[in-house]
Length: 157
Image 1: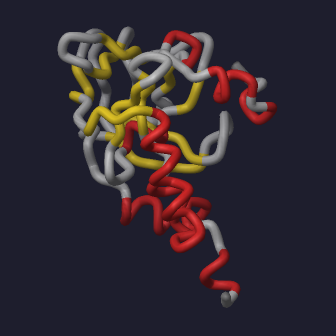
Image 2: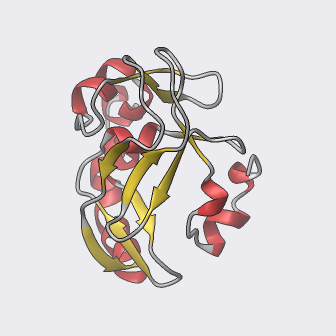
């Protein structure tokens, strides 16, 4: 395997911008002081504005992990791109998307400016967001697996 095949493409901002579905209008992915890349407003966003309606396929966590283990070694440079975007619906099921959307670049904050609401599942601004401000969400308010919560890399929660 050559070096170009081993590079994690999700660390390349140009690749991320080109390969991420533009699902949240008037935003742009940039480097973030919070973590890696983040999603930033390019226009003012109003309080209570719906930013994103979630879609995807409901699968069991076991099925998702099985598919990931079967495919991950063959798509190494892209595995974090494909096996990243999902929402835990409960302890057994996920809502997964086949491709990355801008939603996956919203970083965690204990003082967020967006939140997920249900029926239908959507991302909503919970305060005005100014041009250039990073969109954030409190991950602790989402359904998360025990594996996610006990992962040493997630101690920022």
